Image 1 (tube, rainbow, N blue to C red):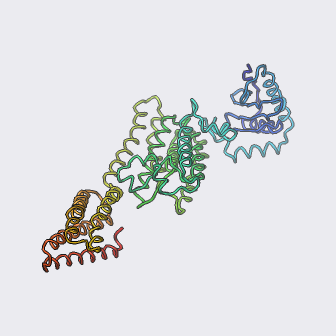
Image 2: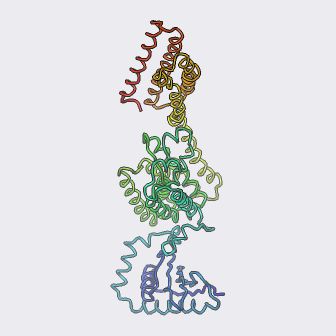
Length: 489
């Protein structure tokens, strides 16, 4: 079975930057694609052909020079060592030729590109970042021993999206009803008892483009943060900042359906920004990364000013991420201190849960529950109002009296009990006013039907008839007022 082959080269007389420029030019001469360029590690791929399965050449630097290792990208054929050795021999020869023949102006241009591109400012946390990521996108979907948190989060969101589409949800423009059914953050539902929407909303997306952009941003954040923080911290921070972003969205908007991972992703970028503002990473590395991430965050916040984008969730995620990052700093600075490690995980989690519980209690809104219960009210109203249709047919007093006693009066008594049972609900002001109207309306209906029962008993009693007509007129006036009020739902 073929095994990786290695060779060491001395770079005496060359600066680190000059060595990198020579390697890049040697790879270009060999027509090898540079997949990953880093001051500590360079990865290139040989072209595939009838004689080659495609090999990966990895160059790592040390004080004495560089070590080049060649291995097969996928299959490892029996007796394949010769091909690996040939690649290394070609690299050594081409590097030597390039060193002796590369024009000074080409070297100068290469050095300038390295500096302007920020390559030499990268640090150890990104030495493996992006390797194979664009060549083999599947790597972002397959959890591995050393990198599983980010793929897991991506997989959950993608699988939820696929399940939504398979179930019949539109793949580009899902309706608000579909989003709510799949767990989006809707104020009436969340404050009405569906607290779990604070988390599930982070895995529900509004169409193909939405999920693609968010997963791309999550992948970029994950390849930097997961090696730095660890897998479990990434998972926890995603959930904590995602919940925080959902809470801010609830607080800011009156009645918006919010969904997507962007709040949690802004949270991860907030964590990264906070750590870049500390001395956790080397100063030179922080400078370039702080600028690039700062520009990314600023651009997306500006883009969030467009209609239909929940920028409140973005800001909530970013701010909570910044706070979490600063809380994490002592634990990352002193990884041997277990107390700091526990505090760094516990404080943000407990804080967000406490804030969430407090907001859900204080902002409790039972409007949705009220509207569900009122469906029974309207069904009973239909039963109670059959009397008037029957009266039109003049079936006789005995029949009408039986209808009143057996159906109409019991229906309105049931409605009165139903409305009284809803008095303790915490309703929005417009719905509370409507509830007061329905309560008065129900009492008038019941009084009117009680009077109708007396009317059919007393026959032509004018006082009873006058009371019946008075309550009927009052009901009609109340209905007109209800329909004309602009401050009612």
